[in-house]
Image (cartoon, rainbow over all chains, first blue to last red; front, top):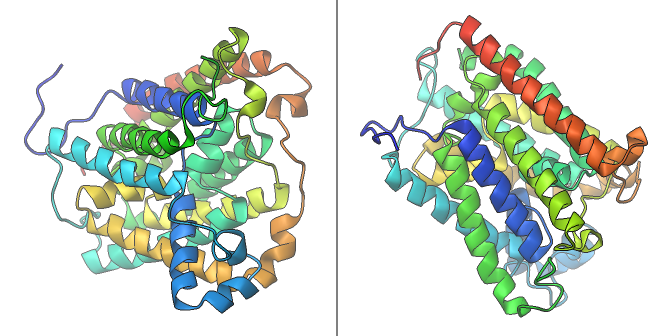
Length: 175
Length: 197
């Protein structure tokens, strides 16, 4: 094992990282019969929050009422527990590889403010898209691909294909 | 023990949530340790200066696909009990396109923004906040998208069926494609000017 640098630039070999990720995904299917996810927990948290503030609104909304209200427990959900684990696992990795630090990472050509505005807009669009596609890069694309779901492959191609084009449009933010 | 072990009753459902935390920890560790808490490392794939996303993502996909087929072949997993992402073609394409734009703007996807937030990246935290807003806006305006959301339903369609081949043969081609991409990515990365980040 190579020495871990103090500046936080030590990463796993990408193929080793991929094998670990693939094995975790395999275990998720073997143990719980389902893949990994990230956006599902956000959806459940939003539904649960709205349900606390305005329960009648949830009951009248055809989307929310699938996940919250009427005795459902959106926060006691596999995906929510899994995401709590993701935060803990990433934090542990941050300790191991010396990457725990508050900062805004951005290209030297742009300001932190611009980076944060684009991060907000990007998150907003990504969040919206996950609901339309019933999952994100992990839940729909990666986990879907593992069980050869047609929709999973389509979502993966749509995400990466669009991102290749869109990255060029937003290239001043990155390179 | 035939998987999935929770639904087959070998362990009690209460344990499912404990496993969820442990599986999540492995997921978060693998992503962060591979460098997915850095938006500039992730976005390198789209400019050719760092292909870590392609390498990690497709290695994971082939390991899990092959693993599940082997486990199924040896009778260790009941494939029919696995959750297969249902195919709603229109939502998958339109949602995927919106996500792709968000990816290029924000530099993260949901899972990687969680990892970035966990190690203190403020852009990751803001991206995560944006996601909550996006999900909220979608839910509030759901009647507008309801038809789009439900159209193009093809059930639990498998990709190998679309090509008319067996799951094993499709996975074999997937592995070949992935290895080809790894060589291609390594070749491109050598040609592209390094970006400091």
